[in-house]
Every structure is written in structure tokens, then in C-alpha cells.
Length: 294
Image (cartoon, rainbow, N blue to C red; front, side, top):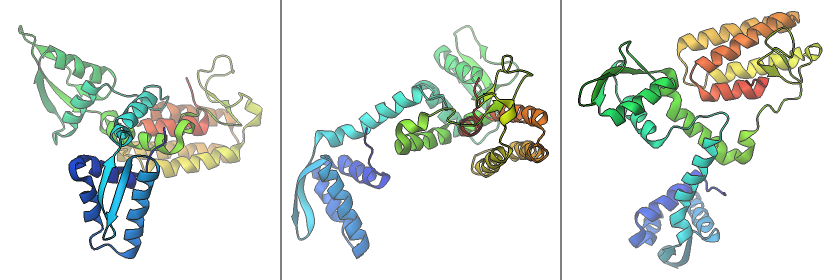
């Protein structure tokens, strides 16, 4: 599917929102524009026409006064939603929640309380139990307490994984829109090495071709440097950043001393901790850069 830019998407959405008189939306946008902004707006409108989203656009006094939104325009956002959802369902880097679970997590995310009192019927309880099992929320030790009518009460808190979910989803959608199928390339790495276990056969994690004699320490150092830059842009706690930074520093030191055994151990620790942070984007970055995979 071909995607429109965010600016043109917004323009199309505004036209759809006022479909009864959408040329008026365009005409209003020309009021008071600078020459540069005027040219930019005309370029956006031209894309919508050339790509078949709108048609029969007539101009008067140098602004649109008549036109039609084509079915392709009305269908665009729904088709985009279906395409993105299908991609996310098979995404190795992101786990997509169903609509009910997303709705429940979003409602919990809007609370300013650390410990949130929740209640509802059995169906709502099953949704929260699912979020709890998969690490998005956490119940107090008693879990959900059901009464004879099937209603429940509980106290829940959102984990780091839950806090990151919607931001990670938005970032991942943006990556898919820009990169297309390239966003799903896994383990595209030339040089790899075993980071766990004493032999290739008993190692649950492999990085590269498994040849422990061909470790490119300089390459690993460069990737560790990229990782340091990456973690500063993610929504991690100060404690998580501090621990990750200490692991990276230890790994860098072992690269300098060319100690493959200790380096493998530290990278294994790094991968294990990365999965515990709840950040799908961080896990994807580490998996891609170092070739980690179960």
C-alpha cells in the first residue's frame, strides 16, 4: 500500500470531515498564507488529485470552489488501518493487543494513580487477567476478587511494558509506513558469534554465523555505541538506563581486552535485561544489531 505523507493525510481527513462542502475547507486554508505556504498547500492538493483521492476540482479567484471526494479518498484510512493491523499481527518486534485489551490498557493509562482500583463484570475481568499474564499490568498479591454475581474488584498498576505500549505502537507504525517490508528484516548481520553456552549446539542465543574465532570487536564496539544513543530516546526509567549503561560499559571494556568469554556473558545479560524492560523497540534494536533470537 502506498501511504500519503502526514501533512497530506491531515488535509484529506479534514476534507472528509467536511465532505458536504469540502472545497470550502481548502479555500479557507489559503487565507493569509505566505507565498511559500501557498505553494506547499497547492502541492498537497495536487497530490490528492493526481493520486485519485479527489477529482473535478474547479478553481475561482485562485481558490477551490467545487470538487468531489472519490471513493478512494473515503477508503484510504480504513485500508491503511487494515494494512497496518495485518502487518503488526505478524511483527517479530511488536505484539499487537486486541481492541478490548487496548481499550482497557488505555483507560488505565489515563489514571494518575500508581495503584488503580478496578472493578467490573467477568468479561472485563478476563481482559485484565490477559493484560496481567502478558506483563502489561500487575495486580496486588490477592489478584482479582470475584463475588457471587461474577463481578470483581482489584488493585492494579501499569508496568513499564504497559506504559510503553502505545508509544511503541505509534513508532512501529511509522517505521512500517516508511520502510515497508524492510521493517520486518530480522538478523540481517554479517558477523555473529555465540553469546550463551559453551558450544554452538547448547546455545539458546546465536549472534551471527556462530564462529567464535571471528568476533569483530570493533564492530561490536560501534554497535554498543549506537545502543547507548538509542536508550536515551526511549521511555525507560532512570534505573533501567543506569543498569543498561553499566552493562554496555562492561561489554566495551571486554571488547578492548578482546576477552570473548566475558563479552559473551555480558551480552547475554544485556539481552536478558532488554527483554525485561518492556520496551519492544529496545528489544527490536538489540535483536537487529546483535542478531539475538530465541
